[in-house]
Picture 1 (cartoon, helix red, strand yellow):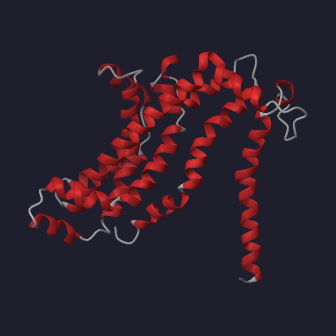
Picture 2 (cartoon, rainbow, N blue to C red):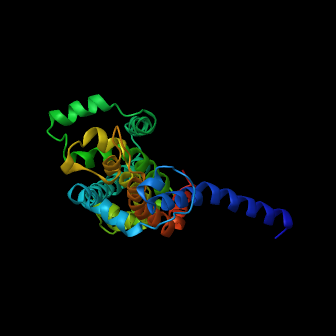
Picture 3 (spheres, rainbow, N blue to C red):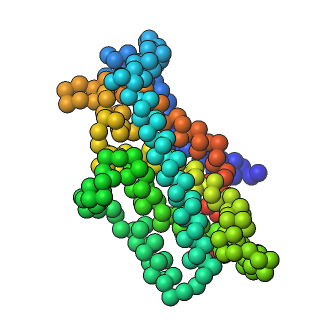
Length: 274
């Protein structure tokens, strides 16, 4: 390693520490302070550590609302990601393997799903019309609708790297089209599936705006909406607010740390052949 490469690496690590580590350290320091010290919003060491007291108070706030929020967010995340994997792989397989006159139209619709911003008010009208507004399963369908375009493009790109000979060999052996997909192709999609699960799980679990619009009501609260528990028009409990942020941030952060290599591998695996 040359001196220039070593210096570049050190600079990159320093920048990464400032961008990623310092904000998390600030959140942690604020979360363990007293209410009075936290109100100053300073990057200073706490004079008294109130980690356990703040943790217990955040969990017990509003009759253990945070635990209910964790349950709702987990149900929404698991349900939406499961449907995204199944439908994304199916549509991506059809677009890649079965050329037809409809493919260009479907592909254009997929691209529009990435580029066109969602229309909140018409979506609420639709959900109300079909009886899915303020429901968990309605929120799952919303997350699927918003994430399906990305899933389809990811799978389509990856399936392009799988030789067509596998499909033809399975058909010659007597497999039906659905068997070719579920028994031959789908097991080979594991790298991109892991990537999709991690990326979409973090995005859906951390989603704030969609539950705010489409899932009102105390019984439907998600983890991001619990941040309102400690902010009012006249008062903010910053120590409890940052403790809540810490509890909400840690699970996605751990997932990202442990699956970082899988994310990169799945994103780049489909880049060889489009």
